[in-house]
Picture 1 (cartoon, rainbow, N blue to C red):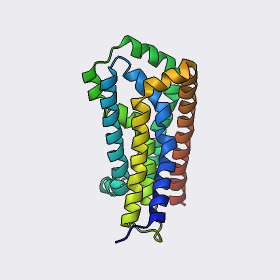
Picture 2 (cartoon, rainbow, N blue to C red):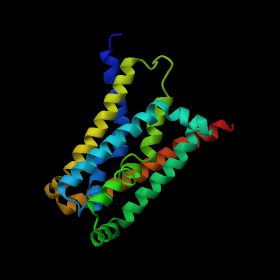
Picture 3 (tube, one colour):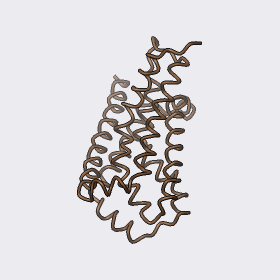
Picture 4 (cartoon, one colour):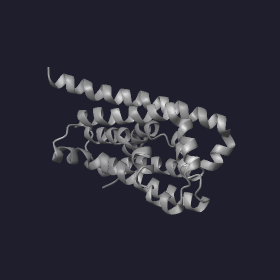
Length: 220
């Protein structure tokens, strides 16, 4: 079956455009650097590769079989949006008001290479990088496919390319987090952290609103 280039481009841009602001690898790079500050550059590169790979798998699973997993447990997508949005709000609110305290605590607590390796999935991948907000949006992308746009090989390839592009940005931002921090300086990085935390709160509110609206419409 020949691949449809237009479908591939459309699907990849849809996945990338919807998930990139929520995954926010540049904003999260500051937090990643804080949590791995005492780890060698080589170990940080290895951890960043594992995070990117974990994120890629989580996104694909959420897009393609997320709705089936929810159906198995009897959970509706709006409920996931409300619950995930609340977690996103809590995470963003905590980062917004306690970023300085977290950095001081991180400096006091040395992180070994083994600790960083164990942290690669939790909390560095989930929920820091691919959290409830990203997962709920990825599930929504897979669930809200119009009947006029069936899941074809081209659509599958496009979704994979979009998720791979997200993973690549995660890898690059985390792998070179130290260089990015040096280039931008502490002041700019702090501004990015605060701004990304505020945006994270707003994204969480939007996710909760989307889910709550759907729930309210279902009881009418």
